[in-house]
Length: 198
Image (cartoon, rainbow, N blue to C red; front, side, top):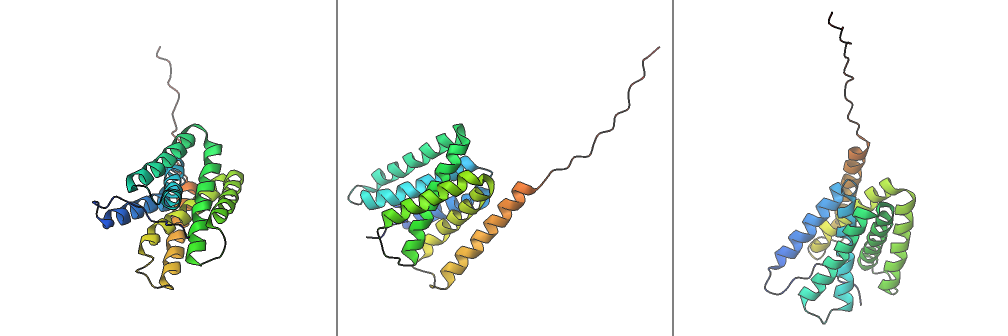
């Protein structure tokens, strides 16, 4: 059974709300995943928590699945605030796991999706721990792009979806790379020594 990567809300909430939440969270990751790395870890944790809750708790009420997803996000945010390097690895695990689920679902790759999620998560964690800044930029851009296009999967043509994903990911990587490497150069202030008053 494939994972449901969509945000599941109670029946009394319009389905457009789930799309809006996914797109807004995706934009935050796409453009600000590295500068707001704690938010990256929290949002990626939310998406993985939602996918796991949709899979393992499918018979439960939607609000229980939302609580599981929010709890995963809160754990990620707290770790992101207090333990940065560990948070990068956890964020890499969340991002790698979510990307593995998204890719296997989109490409109809055979095998247990839980194993793909763990393998993708471990690879994401290793990459994020080794090359922190650029790994977080790339991973958050990929997850942000996936979160933005995922709600439109049924509406977009099979050839437009990967192109939209790649274009968004490249925009995120370029923007965040620019953001990280920009240097604010301040002109040196020249002061003249004051002469003692005689």
